[in-house]
Amino acid sequence: MNYKRVFFAGYFLDSEDKLKYTRLFDCEKYIFLESSGLYSKYNDELLKYFPMNLFHMRGLRIWNMLFKRVELEPTFIDLYKRDLKIFKLSYLKDPLPGGKKTFALFVYWVFRRAFKSRFSFVSALNVFRTIVSRGKSRNQCGFKEKGKSYHHIQSLKMLAFRLSFINGYGYVKKIPDELDASKNDLLILWGSHNSGARLLLDGMKKKGVDCFISEYGELPGTFSLNKEGIFGDSQIAKNWNKISTASPMLDVKSYINRIEGSQSSSRSNSKDDQMLTLYRVLYEPKVLTKKVVYVSGVELIASGHLFDKEFVTPRMVNANEMLLRHVLSNFSVDEYIIFYKDHPLMQKNYEALTLNSTDFKGVFFVNTINVDNLISMADITITLPSKVIMTCLMYRKTVYAYGNFSIPETIPALGYYTGRNVADIKQVVDAGCNSINSGLYPEIVSKLLQEYLICHQSPLFESYDSLVEKQKIENIIDSQLTIDK
Image (tube, rainbow, N blue to C red; front, side, top):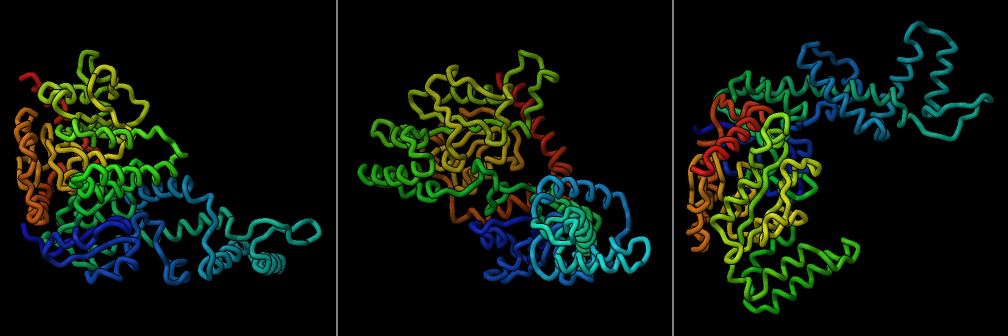
């Protein structure tokens, strides 16, 4: 389906290629993000300020914020409770920002507290003293005590939160009407758990807009904020092509030594760095002839509770164990380098999904290496349905999806293969996985997004929390039932 307009809503990092991603769609585009001022400097597409969390709403004039009202409806109450919890846990301990707006809010707060019940000259005097002292408390002699100013007053912070939330709610609520959104439009949204994003999604759906909910890293040109770097950027990944194509071995070793210098300084001068050790192993002449197979483990959020003792029998195979053993039955450790890494989002204490490296001789367990580095090294990545698949496509690296993924069929030009028998991909790996057409990549991804991933009122993408995760679990169960067939 060709859309008249595409609306993008989410956070962009400074290092991301925003233009390359947004221009996958040849139509009118609107970008919603909190950092729209910076983005607009090098982007001529229409921008609109958008608070991902409603209490992040900016007010141009403090007096306009003070007297706005909204209808007390169930959606408002649900989102308010959610944001209030976030604010108390993450923001309440921080001081209010400086500036005239904060001081004006402080003055309003002082008058409101002083004359809440009735007017008196004593209250008026207290108002004057409080404003002059900038909220600092006084001792018994009437002198200002050393301490914090009004920027640290908790009740003032709570007032600021309530006003910002109410203004953000009213602002986002009007967006679908102001844009005259219709069924000919598309909304691509990541960070859908934020209150502003949820309210925008609800309003757009009521207008009949097609909505595609995603996360960082699931879409080309986006990268995750995850500290493990699951979809992050790295100098090693950027320069991997330079390393892998260097003919003299001295050039490769020289590059590794430079990396070691920078890595060691940030790791307390550690000489036993697993990542650097593996790089050296990879560049030994006898190893260079081997193909690299990276097996990615499944994560707790997607399927971990499937293997909880409460739901399964002790005889049920761990999904990660099932996949790795299936790979080893087709790719010998004597002929291939096999990497295995737990999914970075998997909880460390979840034993039901972990593997014992001693049970898999010859397999490199590489949990300390970032996913983007492993994908860059590997000739192929083999994984259960996971966001790792889209990361491989971003890097133009071959990937095999074991089971049903959002992309339903094999597309060699994209380096994407899918099925339930990794033996089918062995010939492609041995041949060099060279069928990827990098020139067609933007066109293919655009087509995939519009024809495969985005379906009007598709239950698969209505709710990432419940429906997408449920689909992944069903895929994994089905994969286990058919593994021996």
